[in-house]
Image (cartoon, rainbow, N blue to C red):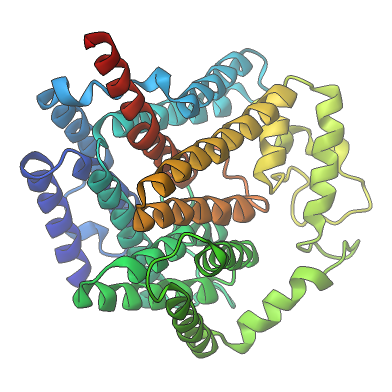
Length: 439
């Protein structure tokens, strides 16, 4: 009953606050629904069988129309991030005509098109720094809820948790990848918020999310979280841009984090993490190291299919490129298990280049934003950019071992960079241009 009450109160409250408080809350609600995913929860039969995500997108469209004059100033094509997103969508559309599995490509393409439309609406309605805070808090809330679901179910598949995933990440590793970026975002807000209740809530949420990473036993997610936390802490400690007692705060956070880590880890988690560097490719059984064979196979496949083979193209052609002496489990039609090689095998060299260019755009735009924030002396907002970048780094590390090219969370992280660039760089330039014209 607690899950049902939490979901319904969030859903109804989201609709009310989107109209009364901020249009961006409509997208925050979309994020929450993504993590709740009632259709896949044990309590799902207790709520009406509706397409809750669809209605949140309708809500986003409604609040955009009601605030059209204000929100339409956020021009999508002025964002270099969205120009690359649209280019990737175009590539998927073209690839349909020669995809190895046309029906599968069509189904995934339609879903990706819906995602791009949703991200475009979100860019329009996230208009201020406060709006950006709303969606980042929603991301943390969603990560906490999915972690809470992992805690409720426990390890139900050997030393892992299965069956708690979202609509686009149903397996254990995908669920861990959806949770992981929220940890560094939570760390940032724990540091900057002065509200004691909010701090306590973030400590609880962080504990649940760390516990979920341990329960799920995802090596990629663990590496992602470790890299993102190191990135954020490093910049907090060594940056010349400091606020009072910042370094002391870093030391306190490190002590608290290490104590929490020691508390939540168990022997199963430690044993699995040790295999990150010790596993080898085997002819007797599939292992994590077998993924490197898939990556080499994807590279070889790209030579024969330079424009890609469409969505699930690698699975289709995998038997032709994976060496016969490599054990691949029950089937030789395996996923490539890396977003980088997923892009290469599905869209060819051009798709791989587009992925790299989109990520470079995030890096470049974040530098621009941080330069403006340093100049204006906005320490907290500067480190929010560091936290967003840390969350993106977390997902990039995690997706190196997973197929997440079209994952919702991945494009949320791109969206945060695009929104920040719009708020801190594009909009001030537009104001200056208008002032110059009037002068």
